[in-house]
Length: 153
Length: 150
Image 1 (cartoon, chains in turn brown, blue):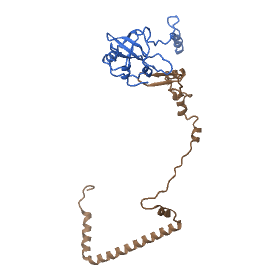
Image 2 (spheres, chains in turn red, brown; image 1 turned 60 degrees about the vertical axis):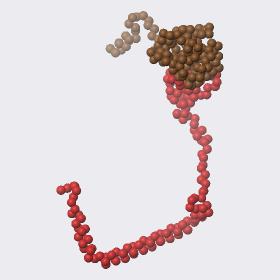
Image 3 (tube, chains in turn yellow, brown; image 1 turned 180 degrees about the horizontal axis):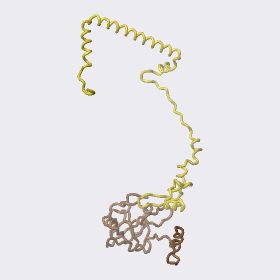
Image 4 (cartoon, helix red, strand yellow; image 1 turned 45 degrees about the horizontal axis):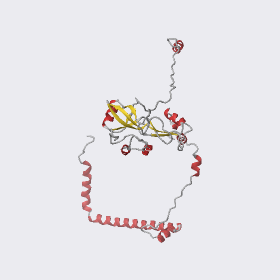
């Protein structure tokens, strides 16, 4: 039924086609009259539309719904075969910690090595270009006195 | 002063009893008969002109030895000063179970041979017409130009 939302069995009710082509099925004259009185079925409490809008009697339906659990399948990745993947997965936490510490130590040693290198380089450069260093200093002082584009005069 | 005015308004000035609420006691008058104005629902030139001019066709005669026409009957209409045959494809009167009723009395214009004047029917046509029961008219061509069956 276009108004009440109930099922209209064959032989019951009326079937109206409006001038604009819209079809309406009415269960009985109660529904028909309500429609022509321009009542909004969403405001008429015994209709299906009202009950849906105000969520009447749907708590039971919601409880009955089963929650679906998605099962994740463990698949082999491009870089690792299944065996390698499982091995990585099953590593003990102590093992992992040891790995991490090792990595940290390596990184630190690398950093130290780099620093030592840099220092050595700098010293070598300083020995080579001492006289030029003074000129550079002079040039550096010139920079701040470059012409101002805007701002305060 | 306001109270006095209100009392005055309740009493009719003339003094006689004026019935304000007229309730119609006649039954629904939704038969299609002579003098009934119909709505042309095909795309024929004549029909369109008539409807746009605000001069809908008027039934002059109902074929089939009856006085009242319903969906599936042929009628003779007067349209823009002409006499034309027409076929009723929808009526306001409720038909019966499993048959739709329409908001307007719909007409498709025919020529003298019984062929539709237009080449499309714009309103929905009830599908019980497919049984083609009218002894006076073979309206299969008419159904062929229908756009929507209901």
